[in-house]
Amino acid sequence: MRSLLVAIAIAAMAIARPAAALDPAAVEKLAFGDSDEKIEAINALAAEADPKAVPVLKAFSAGELQTAGKRVLIVKGEEATDAVTGEKVSPLPPEREDILVNNRLRGAVQGGLAALTLASPDRTTRLASARELASGADESMLPLVTKALEKEKDSTIRRLLEEIAAILQLKGGSAESRLAAVRTLGESSNPSVKTVLLSVIKNEPDEAIRREAEQSLRALEGRLAWSQRAGLAFAGISLGSILLLAALGLAITYGLMGVINMAHGELIMIGAYTTYVVQTLFRAHAPGAFDWYLACAVPASFIVAGAVGMVLERTVIRWLYGRPLETLLATWGISLVLIQGVRSIFGAQNVQVENPAFMSGGMEVLADVVLPWSRIVIIFFALGVLGGMWLLLTRTRFGLFVRGVTQNRAMASCVGVPTARVDTWAFGLGSGIAGLAGCALSQIGNVGPDLGQSLIVDSFMVVVFGGVGQIAGAVYAAMILGLVNKVLESWSGAVLAKIAVLVFIIFFIQRRPQGMFALKGRVAD
Figure 1 (cartoon, rainbow, N blue to C red):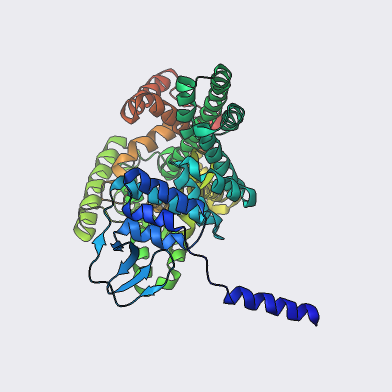
Figure 2 (figure 1 turned 135 degrees about the horizontal axis):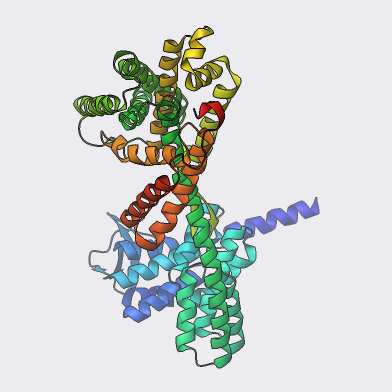
């Protein structure tokens, strides 16, 4: 009982005790000092780590800090608060002067506010504050950064704070502390640290610290090189998955059925526009379930594109089997009709397809390598489509019919396989997969009438390079072309990389017309 009374008494004393005011000298410098003194005052207020400094610094940056004689006020409309004590001032003093603020001072305030929010319970706020300080912090903030570092548990924020503390130690520490700071920076993977180490190598008078900085720089450059390779590998796999999605449908219509379908890109475009329509319907009629619109857009894009493909096969392509030139010209004309039809319905301008919440942002695996969730989802989506297509063609009666008609149409017809119906369904399957590719592409780029035009050549390259009629070949070809394309882009740019890949494909097909994986046995006949 006695301990309870003591606790109540202590709490009452704490409540009755007046709140401590900000440092009056710092606030006075902030109001009446020159630019250097004001920056010194900003750093001093931030170093106090007092939450009451936040409204003062924000008011200073926003031009809401004024003076009335020797008194400094935060003025908002017709209300004023004493900047030092936090007390309300009433009535509002009639004679007041504004405190002028320039961009240099606003930048200093931004850094000071970042330092003050390092103790926030919210991880996102602390991470944003640490990143803000990393872009430029004053050495007077070192105690505040050190204090935040002692309490920080998150590994990402700790690593960033350690780098900030090391950079601040380089500005004014002893020789031993600067040497330790250089070693700390040598363990970083942050590209911005490279500039700091180069500055140390150029300006540091101590020979030992310069040598240590050179070693740290070599270690950092080695890690950055591996980060760059990892980023290129992911970009290549991502591009490969997109090429694979675009080429899988063509691998059926061209690789298995022998139809040169120049309207394949427009079937991809139809899938993308179907996704846009589904998104619009969800936004208008079910905004609370908007993040789930893709669950409806995926089957819808497959069904719509597949239905369009089946109509094309029934009305045009069926009468042109075995006549590749006529098929090419007819499907090219159909592609122009589809493009103009979409322009008439949706307009010539691109339309915007928004990512669901779970596909926004990215995953940071290294300091300078962020993997977008949209690309990660598309990679797994491509694998899922590939797996479903493989099961359909190898483990179902329909797949058996398709393979039978592809290998020997006359014999398949003799044993009762409805070859005409199989042609229609197989073409619909290839077209539906093209629609799925359009649904995926809508999540990473613009959706417009010309969407398919940029993919048709790449799709044919994947199918021909992998081997006509070989689904596995399309997978390998898509990944190889994606990786090679991204590697060449890092050296020579996107245009020259595309030209180099096209020249390589031409020479490769001249030497090996059957592609990487040739058909064998009676299938090849």
